[in-house]
Length: 487
Picture 1: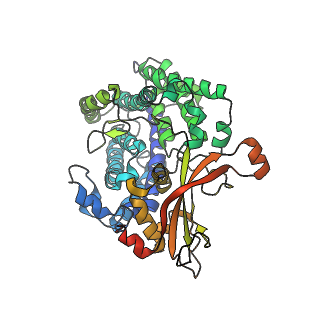
Picture 2: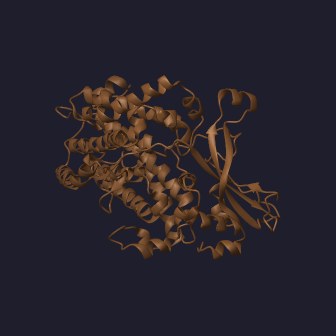
Picture 3: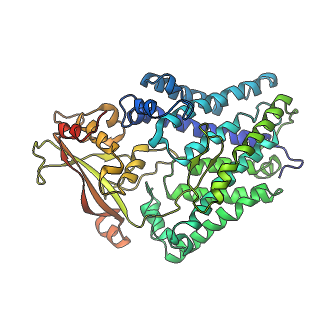
């Protein structure tokens, strides 16, 4: 893969792509972390402090547990990501470019590690660890006209391999529908947050879905081995991965999972390949500094040692998805959709000014930014942005009661208190900007399915739904407090 190859152009494209994703991630933290996991969040920051030791989940917020510190860290991350994307350290003299680059990427990694380790449930996704693992390796790529250490691109290909191959293994071992090639009959409809193309993809023929599923297995179980092959085979494997992830990106909302995988796939290219594809040429490079080469070799040795547990897990019949094996998320295991739900359930949250909360009262619905609450609303395109509350409500709806998701009761409490930070997570609070306040809130559970083409032509709706139960019965603020939804 690396014999006689240069990676200056590859580094530039990779760093710009990673900086853009860091920028998105820190914007999500700036707008969502405080109402979700801040001082008075749905999972208050003090619970993190009570539950773990610093060495178990290190975070700057362990040392400064305040919303002010959260805001400073988030917006600092936004600013530094923008610098990495547009300016620093690419115009600096060679003697300064690499040291400044290392400090910049290390700071981004440390700041985001703080959010992931303190965010707990709302940051428990595989793409969080993958962003951290990728961001850590980016520290050692260098900058300016110096040549990047080739071994770091090998390590990035190793992250990409574990992401893709792990996802393939957990599917083929998991749900029967992956083996009989029928999983995509359900996936587009039941995925966490469908997008505008999901409805159309769902209604493709069964033969199309079988071919898609077979292609998924090839791309996740066979193609990843070519990441380490000589050129142009490695680049062809990377291009196939980029095309596959592009399809996932246009048919679903998986935060920055697909975009980050595309960025990682850039590491399978070389400057020679990119120069044949793009109207650019790499400048003459200078030798990689000895200290950077030495650091890259040490990091490679560290990654090799830390890869034992992830590989053992990946090859195990009891393979776990999206697991970090060290508190710094340096080497992780990945995988998604080992099982596919056959039916879609949604929680519909409603409030009323009726003090009794009778069934025939006038109930008004809280609207979310991504969840398909209103059957008439076209599914939105959210990714690569991430709506953390909407994702967790999808998980919560899988159970008929909030017993496994007690934070939902705290969410109801915040709505009854008309908390402005919580309201910021919504698309619409029907009581905001009025002189009315909700006396009671209820949470209903519905089964949703995509409308058929005939139903959509007739009604104009994207979804058909039927009520299947009451998730939280009508409750006042005092009643929610008695149920244990403490701040």
